[in-house]
Image (cartoon, rainbow, N blue to C red; front, side, top):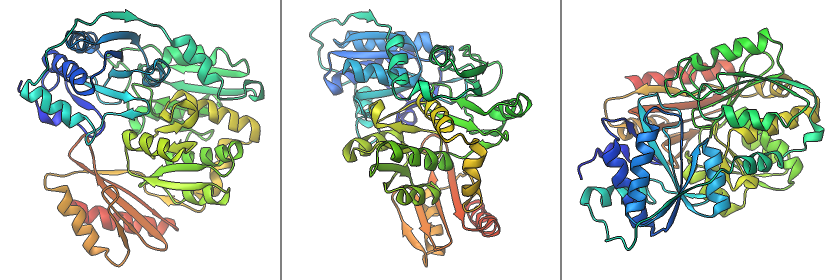
Length: 448
């Protein structure tokens, strides 16, 4: 069949419904998934999007018509879906467009936890099967059964912390009408010392309050204000499908993913000394510096959950963090979760007895980061990255993921987005003045 090849991304399938990704495409992808992986059982969940029921129905019909049985786990967060794939030891498809706007649909596909289908490992194979209509004749008709694993998930994530060690803490959590609200309430109901105030906990695919990506300042502005106004110890925000997690400190300030990775990495090294910890190419020097100082081994990896999970499992790393709010845990099948890091932070604050702002101040005094700066481009991103490599060739130039250039007192990474026509800049320097100077210089080159 004819399908927009642009929906087949680096880590998943994603497109506007019904223009780019619709029931016909969902059905064909379901069939292709079974044909390519040769699986006889597939776990399937979905998020709260208004197109979710139609896409779920189309994908599962494709799976069953191609001969696979479907285990329907219902409307769940993505970390619940990963839990189901891992504990049932099955392949899976999650019908979700994560943090994208309401009009999008998408599919996140597990081969066998923690291995996901990605652009270079399966997703382009599905595209070729769909485009060629090359489906082998099925030998049977699949069936559908339902399974509710939510209580087992609650038990499992709570087992990762010492509940009795938690101090009385006031938490405000904004789930943005995404998938985390219902399961978050069930988890936090089991934490007697935690005073939880919820914002927009009810899943609603029409997104009546704000968007699903807390990296966008407008989507977290209300939470930042509420943390200060209510005198909360910490604020937590989750993206639409709950695999990304963000923190607001007691000052009402957004905590960068770099600094959170560094602090949680340190904390994990107390639990598991001499361990390996992964971070992505965009991260602040704070991450490797703190990990080395605490006796751990920092390992840099390219951006993206398919790559991070694969490398974590290969290296047997205990923890990984990405700048964009993905946090991965060996104790959670090397997968990313939104709820797990929220619990780890509560345990960390309880055991240190410190305010989050006090833990951050030493990092803020030493590491000056630009945050991610996105530029929409019309030309070839590779030529722009090569131009940067040529201009800054007296630094250490690397091409692990986009172009990275390192000097003694500053460094940057520029990489293309996997989902949009954007170049993304992350830059850090050892002084605020140098950071701002170099940031403005590189932004001007990208936008020239």
